Structure formats: structure tokens, C-alpha cells
Figure 1 (cartoon, rainbow, N blue to C red):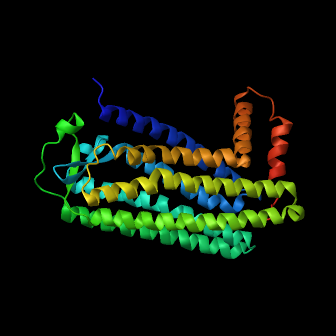
Figure 2 (figure 1 turned 180 degrees about the vertical axis):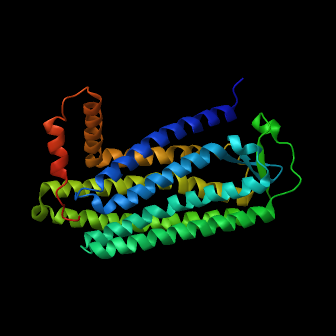
Figure 3 (figure 1 turned 90 degrees about the horizontal axis):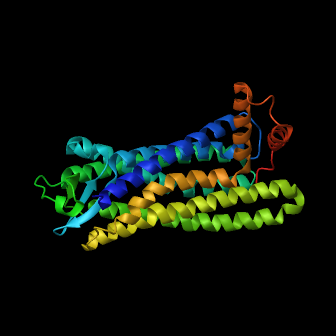
Length: 329
């Protein structure tokens, strides 16, 4: 008989496969696009980092599948994935690495809004330099907070663990955490994420007004590309808030207050499953150039395999036209 844990596992593996396919294709297209001087060239680094982070997050979640629950007034992080049999000595560092990846996902969205603001003010070279430094800082901060989470878990994990198989239906590996420090740390990280989202949204609005004012100067094509970039960044930021930041923050608050959270962990579980996929889909849908690159690459493969004689002119011309430098908006 299927249990809730079985359904959660099935969902995690399906999402993992879809995420690997979508993000791998997206990273390949962005890498192919790097050789062209097109309008999106300034954002390639961010989208590649985002794709790699999505892949790492999907893989980490699939092998761990953490699901926090409350039992006997204590918080337990139950692992439904195939690594659940590992001892705490290995399970804690792997889970801490996954936490670092999640923190990076939360912080990277405000960073791209900062980059966008710098580019919109025509400071291209300075923007690229600042963005590289900012990404490095976010990565270092994420690893540091992951290390702090590792230390907290090492000190707070209980040696004597009760039998919770009657809750999950099976005997899964888990960590019994008797310390609020980790929850407080997560609330702090999520608060910074929410603040960054608010700041990013204000930047987005200022960019939108600026782009609207320059439509008569730069022409319809550059205006539409600017709108595509804005929509991609805004939708991605909203996804990050809905799927990651708010569920983690609410779950941590519930844990601090001692609420029963056996089913309240579902939003964060599902959000972590869906975020890497929806993030890749958003980028692919809104940025039309990547779609054209995908069609062109597919046509070239068909030509090499002998199914087509040549790439249709309408596809080749569309990609070449989009390679022209944009205004930087």
C-alpha cells in the first residue's frame, strides 16, 4: 500500500529527472550563445550560475529529501531519499551542503536585480566586475552559513533517538534536533531574502519606468528585449519567495514556537522540488533568443543525421538577427 512518503519520493525523482533535462539544455544553449554579441550576453554568467545551482539543488534534494516533523515536542529532520541510511557523521555534512545551495538560491535573485540596475545606468564594465565579486561573496556567505548549520547540528543532534516509524509508515533515517539556533539562523536568512526581494522589486519598477521612457530612442526591438529580461527576473524572484523563502521561514517559526508541523513541511518539500524546474522554464519561455538557439541546434543535429538537407532560412536568419548588439537595457 502506498504511503505519503512513497508519493513524496516519486514526486522528488520525477522533478529531479525533469530538472536535469531542462537545466542541462538551458546551460548548453547559454554556452552556445556566449560566442554571439547579442542583447542577452551580459546576463549569461548569471543564468549559467542559476542553472548549475538548480541542478545541484535538485540532485541534493533527490538523494536526501528532507522532511521536518515534530514528535514529542522535538523537531526531527526525516530523510526520505536513498541516503537516509547514512550515519550522522556523513548525513550532517551532506545536508549542510544542501542548506548552502538553498541559501545561495535565496540570495542570488536580489544580486541580479543589482546587476540589472547597474546595466540600466550604462555602466557595463563596472557592472560585470561588481557582479562577479557579488556572486563570489554570496557563494562564500552561503558556504559559511552552511558550515554554521553543520556546527549547530553537530552540537544539537540527540544521541538517543525515538522510534518514529509509526508516523512515516517506514523506518527512515533522521536527525533529532534539540536546538532552536538552526531555526533562528534560517529565519534570519529568509528575512534577508524577503528584504532583498522588496529592494529588487523597487529596482524592477524603476527599470520598467526607465525602459518605457526610452522606447522612442532605442526602438521596439530593444524595448521588447528589455521587457523580457525584466519579466524573467521578476517571475524568478517571485518563484524564489513562494517556493523557498516563505516556506522555510514559516516552518522555522513553527518549529521555534513548538507547533506540530508533521504536514506543514509539505510546502517546503514541494517548493524545493518545483523551484529548479520552474526557474529554468521561466528563463526559457521569456528569453526568446534561447528558444531560437534551441530550434537552430535541433535543426543542425537533424542535418548531421541526414534527416534535413539544411537549416531553414527563417530559423537561421532569426538567430543571426538577434546576434546584433543591443542597447544594454
